[in-house]
Length: 151
Image (cartoon, rainbow, N blue to C red; front, side, top):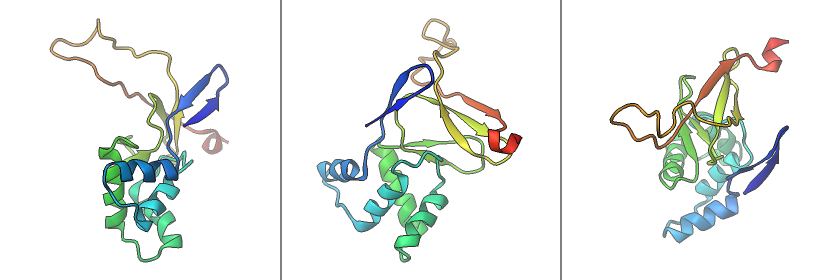
């Protein structure tokens, strides 16, 4: 787990280390393969919300024989185990977020970069839910232009 100092407050990000992910897989009776470990390393401290292809590009730099299918498989296992989040931010491909704490995202409309952002509250709460719905999660995606692209 990582503690991040923000401008207004301290927040806790739930991001497991590669060793913690290996232990989590072993506790589920799954093998700790070199390919899984390489994917875990590629995700660790990666705040870019990478696509599967970006994770694969990182992994093949050290393990040239790893297939994109293997990377997709490991990412799927991590999502199923709720160790990472799969997010669709409207950028054309699913992105993978190792930060499983409650947070939202801001997406640059020019370069597609993604940044975590905290919002104090959801605009829809349990008392204002649409009829027939029980709100279980809120995800807000802000769109704009990052500082780099705005310069």
